[in-house]
Image (cartoon, rainbow, N blue to C red; front, top):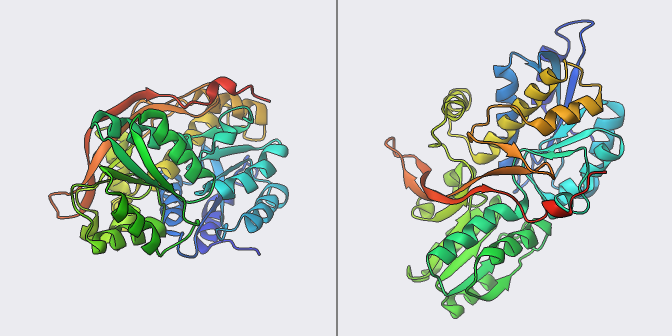
Length: 389
């Protein structure tokens, strides 16, 4: 069951032992690093590691030990790994999980032990509303939000009939709920393939039959890569607009999807062309370190470390005081790659969302060209029900 990557081991060697006697910050990074759904997890890990290296191995000014583990895309394994990280390795912060079903299995372990879970991706509605927890923070988004932006875009474009495709798991249901919250036209059909499914012949046949004005799909990782290739190969007429979110149209999918992605409109909160100083520095640093452009997953991992860095400094370097660390995190005083960033009452971000279109940059590389703002300083729909425990 135990899986700690060579990256985690090397970082433990170069950072955690650096200053004998100094307070040590231990960050557990659990993410998906194997199997067909691993691409986002690799980018997440790389963004986190870049941030730690840029901070000279001292997040919050403290010698830092990253313990990186593969959740194997398995909720049962993830829970056991979380128990080891929290109870044996005694991490003060757990982060890195990509998928909501994994988070819902693992995060309670940290929270019930009094630790902090900082979500650098998954944002299930359970932790945004009535079941929120004072130890749960998000540096990414609540699951519905990116899809709400897509629904708003579809409404603004006056699409009349739309089909929805999303995996049958918590984030998939949050996705369609979010889209329908802002889209007021007719949803002619909702399709929910199994999470991890890679053959979409049945779904594409239904799309062809319905002849909708647009198809909105949320299919993360390998699912989205396979879907878009099969959709293009099916020759569905261009008059049906293909619309998605950053989860299926970003740097983590471009290499495998190629030109099939060109021209796809999608919604997101950050892109490689985001014009802020932290973003430009992050993109340049990531490209130099890894030889590729970063995805939004990498940007969120990077932001997670920078958020922890600012919080530990504000707490006087004492990451072993959960109350002080939570207070400092709630104030979120760090420079996000996104620019404007704050937390709402449920400790999920208040932020802007944009529509982007997959294009080629001057070097011929695929990237998301930011087109326009769709939702400004957007808060999620669940915060009013949150009463922190």
